[in-house]
Length: 114
Ligand SMILES: [Zn+2]
Image (cartoon, rainbow, N blue to C red):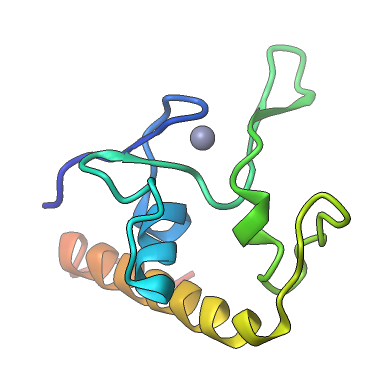
C-alpha cells in the first residue's frame, strides 16, 4: 500500500483517482512542486454534506489541471488552456482511474459491480 498522501490545501487524504500531483507527474514527468513525498493536492473539488445537509466545498481542488477533464469548467481567464495538453491529461486521468479500480478489486476480490 502506498503511503498516505495529503492535500496541501485542505489537509485531507487524497485518493489516487483524485491525485493532482500524480496526474501531473504522469503528464509532465516533473514534480511541479506537488509530487513531493506525501504532499499533493486534490484534483477535482471535494464536496461534503454539511450539518444541515447543504453541500460544502471542502477543497477547491486543482482547477488549473482539472479544467482539462471532460465536464469540468474551464477556469479562464485565470488559467490558460493549452489544447495540446487535453489528450495527455485525460489519458493520465484515465490511468489513475484504472489504478484505483485495480486497488479496489485487489482489496475486495469478491465485491460485485453495482
Ligand atoms: Zn484538498
